[in-house]
Length: 405
Image (tube, one colour):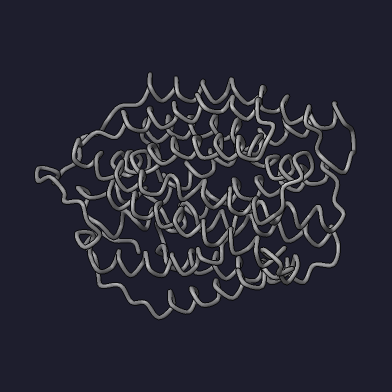
């Protein structure tokens, strides 16, 4: 059998995501430690920052996706979005309060809101159905390989400047921010110079802005995803849980590196397998693994337990994320892909605010209430995942022409 070749756009978008994640994962994974260890911020505020960060971009995702459908052009909005994130990244270097950190984080997410839906639609537009899972699996693998490399660089910086210290130092964080700038801007240049828009059949009629226009199958899929995401708080809480169980900064970085290795390694295989057996089975397996992992995180008694569970958690990401995005393209017409990806990514962002804020409250309380402690967010996340899993099992989508769902 002749080896499948990925379209040029998919490779270019993958390279851009690789470079961007080299940059962003260096900063984002150390950010909760900077907030807690250096600025002394409570977990409820960290949850609020992380939640608002994603929700800030949610409405932009809806609009930018729909607008790319109207323009029938994806590249311009994707380049603008990556450019915004790169331009605001230096703000992290100057942050001396959680308010400045929040402003930098939210500005970065505005860029993500502008780029995400057009970028995903560009991948779908450029790829035939038989390779759709493969393409999105490749994109997730490239993205996560960038995270892997970024974390290795951040670990080297931490080890060189503060050894095995249990808490992150302010100077170390700022060196990490400086190191993150070059790959951030390089990713923008690669996408701007080497990608191109792809004509899509059936796009003569301008799509309408609205949830109803995306079809019943897609609407039910989004509802179920929303239930799952309400329990899917920011991964910052897993990092804080690891530190609470006694793990050093170096240990946390090593754990994150192993997680991203598993995530990247599995994404491509999962995407290609979903082209053969359907998306539903792969997503169901991923969600089941998530529920069990979160239950394990709640029950963990040592740092070693957290390490094992977080590496397994990488398998959930590898199975679910690229496959979920491929499924979106299966459920909607080509002319509405931008709007569909905007809606899908908006739901992920909008639910992240209540999910992360609630997780922070369950952990450390609010006002005069002390909360339930570090295990509570993970019990809640496991329960919501099991509920979404049941809904997904009983959901029977109507047949869609050419669908792999």
